[in-house]
Picture 1 (cartoon, rainbow, N blue to C red):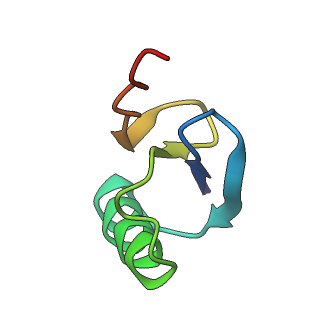
Picture 2: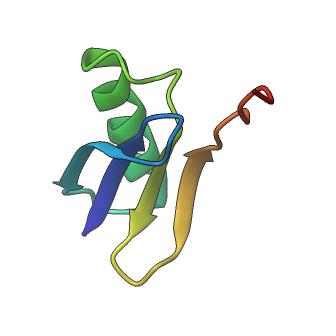
Length: 66
């Protein structure tokens, strides 16, 4: 079992959903397809195995100083 979580630039969760896959490669493919479908591919996200193993991520780019 895997999990996909998407955040805004402030760290607030925008999307958080479990993902069924047979292995890490399939989880990454399905997760990235789901992000594209939901138009979250450019947001900070993580795809993780339920054991905590990181499969894929996109970190936030940091905020400009105010």
